[in-house]
Amino acid sequence: MSDLFAPHVPKDVEARRPLADRLRPKTLAEVTGQEHLTGEDGVLARMIASGSLGSMIFWGPPGTGKTTVARLLSGEAGLAFEQISAIFSGVADLKKVFEAARMRRMDGRQTLLFVDEIHRFNRAQQDGFLPVMEDGTVILVGATTENPSFELNAALLSRARVLTFKPHDEESLGTLLKRAEEVEGKPLPLDADARASLIRMADGDGRAVLTLAEEVWRAAREGEVFDTEGLTRIVQRRAPVYDKGQDGHYNLISALHKSVRGSDPDAALYYLCRMFDAGEDPLYLGRRLVRMAVEDIGLADPQALVICNAAKDAYDYLGSPEGELALAQACVYLATAPKSNGVYMAYKSAMRAAKENGSLLPPKHILNAPTKLMKAEGYNDGYRYDHDEPDAFSGQDYFPEKMGRKTFYDPPERGFEREIRKRLDWWAKLRRERGG
Image 1 (tube, one colour):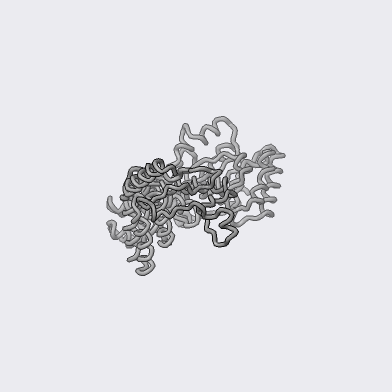
Image 2 (cartoon, rainbow, N blue to C red):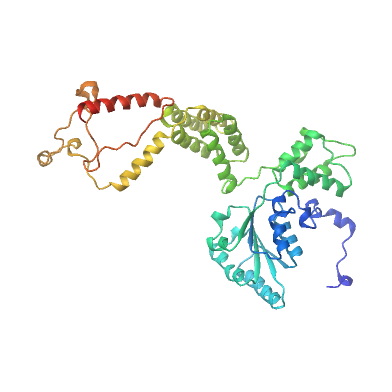
């Protein structure tokens, strides 16, 4: 279309475009927050300099510039740009895009196909990209907020390089705000603390920080400057970036578990509260705390499991938000308890042994003999009742004869397991003395 017939966009309409759209970078060098990719020595800058681009998967949280970078990449590499969304596109749409790309290729021009939310395509649809990637019809750039290892076909991943987009840090979000002030021609009406609070609210999302800034400008009266309390009242606080079914969920529960295991109650409380704040089901967190009690504390503190179950029951009784304090108490208890995975490791070892020796019968002397035939076969013959023995300990061998004695549980010298270790050592000594 010639400029004569190009639609005219009035200045007031241009000004009404969302701030995030008006601030889109014009070159890769202008992209902020992804210098490891777009900087002078970044991966993408080096690809462009080499004159050769391959298919890629852009993996990162929302608002980190995946779409913008893909568009700029096609422009700087001289490629035709096609964009589709896996949410709104099907097989018929893909066929049209592929056919258009083949026609361009015949004319000597390659196509960069940007697929937003590529993880939304099912496995068969993902396989549909393989032929056009292999024959060079398109250079595929897929964008996803989910872990590609879990959401994308191995065949697709083997043909594409995964590039990770990082959440914006406070410095890069601050840079975006400064650019916004330059475009708007006026300062953001926030004091220093409120400005820092707005940056934290954005949670690493560049688009979000600009949207929040727009809300502040719309709300401010002439000469008005908001403090932190005023900011919170105006923007009603943006919800954290968190998907209970996806990576955000698994990342935070992993961080909580490892903080408990690492005996850091402050970090454990922080991640617990982040999950509460994001709307996680408290009973799910209660179940995870129970798991931590049996996996990482175990018999080093037998009360850990009791306290976690009590906390879960207290939440059931009190509900939210009062019951969340009981879960917080259990979380701190676990983080400050002595740690042991002795039972956890013993269970895994015993399970392996059970699978390997599942056909072996227990020794006859510990089997009951309810019939004459079983007595004649030697069932219960030679069994010694421990309560009738000195120290209430017979020292008999209870393993199948072909298997021999095994040791699965090796309690460490920590917490209550010190006492268990003393008992086991004492019984081992008696067993040796009595030939058990």
